[in-house]
Amino acid sequence: MLFIDVVRVSEAVTRTSARLGKIGHLAELLSRVPPEEAEIAISYLSGELPQRQVGVGWRALQELPPPKLVATATLTDVDALLSRIKAVAGPGSQAMRKALVDELFAGLTTQEQAFLVRLLSGELRQGALEGVMIEAVAKASGAPAAEVRRALTLRGWLPAVGAAALSGGVAALRAVKLEVGRAVAPMLAGSAPNVAAALEKVGGTAALEWKLDGIRVQTHRSGQEVKVFTRTLDQITRQVPELVEAVLALPAADIVLDGEVIALRPDGRPHPFQVTASRATTKNDVARLRETTPLSVFFFDLLRLDGRDLLDEPYSVRQEALARVVPAELITPRLVTQDVAEAEKWFADAVRAGHEGLVVKSPASVYAAGRRGSGWIKVKPRHTLDLVVLAAEWGHGRREGWLSNLHLGARDPDTGGFVMLGKTFKGLTDELLTWQTERFLEIADGPTDSWVVKVRPELVVEIAFDGVQHSPRYPGGMALRFARVLRYRPDKRPEDADTVETVRSLMLSASRP
Image (cartoon, rainbow, N blue to C red; front, side):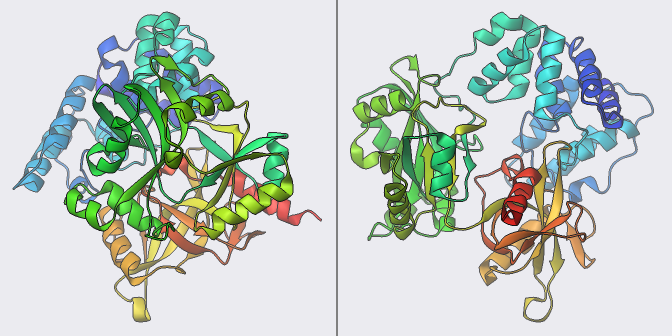
């Protein structure tokens, strides 16, 4: 299929406001895309690359070769060149990568070049959100949308699931199973303002697990091979040898576990999150880092054991299986109760130990991979939100030369964009200021010599605040009170950020008598 066909459909989707209209445009193209190019088409129309990241920054896209007059590039052509760009490494890689970028863009028309620039910069927001794309795949393939969602739960990547549906329909989707060695999207938790509210949401007796301040990890073992994935589905096996050894010591050669790795001090309290994040993602000097900053692992769920998938089993059944194969010291601290006073004491214990709070879980809840299931509710001792950095302002005085004041945005699921909620420079250490200035300049989305530097919405930051108030100053009509930076969250993607609706619900609940 020609690349221009995808570009034109993307533009049609952008011009269409109605959800059914968007689905119709997408389904029409998907119904005629060749099977071998289906993954590429779905990826591009979803605003992502099959390669995820290819190492092309904003600066490399500033001076492009003249466009072609006639569109001849195919999806396969574009995908192959992007793969070559991603593979570039070593001395001279910057010049080599720029030459390949020029080769790629020289083969595209003006229309195609503009599309690819937005795709590479993460700014392709034409409304083909995951829910819309699922419906389009269902319509083009004739498979029920529920079957597409189920397969997506297990496969974790919509382009691959869509390609299977388009080529094999319902039978192909039902053939998708939890595959050891291939990460599935993790189940996420809703939130509640306090323990009593969480217990009420769950509806009676619940399991209360400590919410550790670590890195979420999904661990797969097949025989003597172990693979470890983060919540963003990146593989970090080599960086966490302690976890690999712990899983290899279990009496199960076919197992998939969900848990956390965390760097603990000698007294058992956690190091700051940044210490754990750096240790779990740094690829160099792992042996030395293991000596200076060892990682501990705690598992809280079991998705597969000895050839049997457990995703659809109740939480209580999964916990019984987990306890049979994992030593108690490697299981997240947990209390089962329906007593509010006992639960609040357990919450206080977790916070006193230096952790984030609790995750309150229904014993009947299944593992809703990739979704914020109602059976899991997180409770923290303070208001926090995971927001996306939209821009930053150059500092003055002591902060001159640093990008300091952050523009913060919540995710808008309806548009695929972000809604600004306010600014903050509070909580930023000199170390963070230095790091974020360098990083912002790498992902700048426009000139960097003006007072405000816009950045691609790629970085998630955890923000503490005292409340949400009405405000005509910002597009969402509300603003955070006394916002301050707690930490950056490299383990989260922009699509994991909190939504505008979550923020609005906090404002409304606070206004009730």
